[in-house]
Amino acid sequence: MITIIVVMLTYMALMLYIGYRASRKVKTSEDFLIGGRTFGINLTAIAHQAAGLSGWLFIAWVGQVASTGFGAIWTAFSSGFAPFINFFVLAKRVSKFTLMTKARSFIDLLEARYYDGDKKHIRAISAVIIFISITVYLSSQLMAAGTTLQAVLGWDYTASVVLGAIVVIAYTSAGGLLAVAWTDFVQGMLMIFAVLAGLFVAFSHTGGLGAVFEGMKAINPKLMNPWIAPITIVGLLSAGWLGYMGQPQLVQMFMGMKNPDESRKGAMIAGTTGVFLLFSTFFMYMACLVMFPQSADPNTNFIQMIMTYTPSFLAGIVTAAILAAVMSSSDALLHVANTAVCQDFYNKMLKGGNATDKEVLMVGRISAIIIGAAAIYIALNPFEGVLWVNWWAWGGLSSFAPVVVLGLYWKRATREGAIAGLIGGFLGSAIWFAVGYYKWLHLTFVAFVCAMVLLVAVSLVTPAPPKEIQDQVNELGNGMKTAAR
Image (cartoon, rainbow, N blue to C red; front, side):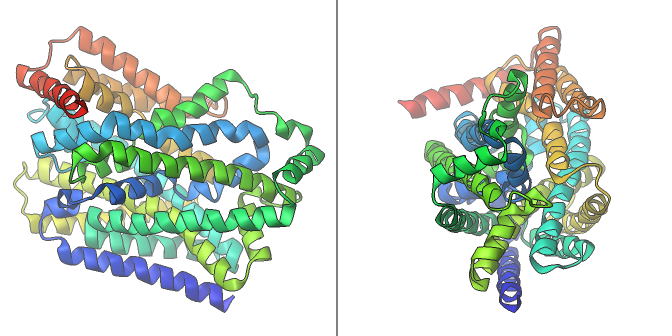
């Protein structure tokens, strides 16, 4: 046990050190908010994946596979292939539009595209959606951290949640997006190692995939059937293929890219990593189910396997990897919510864009503590299990997907359409959850469809955007064709 604790504390110390080194490079608010646009494509791709998968990969995903067996494969297709779509559709256009508009945050990007700098309606609505959704999302990550430390070390759940929050808040508030990207890169590599180690352990103790399938049939033959309700399959696929494009913490990674023309390379790196992680864990968690068919908490099956069949040092590294999955999403989420407070609310709305870099940095670091405290409260008083707390937030943020995508591809998308889409998508998702239909059709599908239909319908009956906005969208398209040649 001492070995595991030492390894985990070493990992946490490393994350804090990276945050400290990043803070030494943060001189301006642009450095803090979008990393000074210095991210190479390898850093962007791996950090994107680490931020996208979260503690869900090692906790809630284990439970989903255990409960639905082959029926969970649709989630593997969804989240595994989503990075390809996200990079191909958004990376280059987001990066180029950031250069055009000098945007420093995700909401800056929306406000510039929807010519709302005078009224700031989109800024206010987006800030509210982000603050609520990301605080809930962050709480799901802290729940995963608490579950992990409780299962591995027997620590008190409350203390585990608070410890995880303190580490994330410390390095995120110190180094901004630069710290987030570099810690996420390291954590992403650690997650890959954990999956490789887990695959070896799982199949060396079960006798291979054939033996796993036979074991699942013995537990429940229905677990071998991949066919579930078609509408549920549509919802699960939409969670990744559509939902990724609406997550501010992922889109903001594209804003920090140094070279937009490398987006295709990023797609291959992030996509290949996603497919490997999702399908590897899918089959590995089946093996875990066979190894622990009577588990009191299937969410901890992977942890049980590592604790039972590996030496303490390796168990410590894998536990650190689980925490890495938690923290790599937590820091990205915290940074986006933080940015919404310090840049989008304080600087742009309260200060009229005249806040000094020192003020923005100070407010950002204070807001990180406040947001973290709110997430801790929800994590200690959850309204659902970790999977559904996570997906509630994911669904709410998916409201941004049509607004971002159509905004960068369709010059006719208007400010009024964007406002209607954001409000309708977020409320539609929240209502869908409240009436209890979220286990039948994923919240992302509801949010996306509501937002898209309202955005298109309202845009078509309201005045077209100013000519300069339409020219910018056309320039994005022309730039893409030129690059392709």
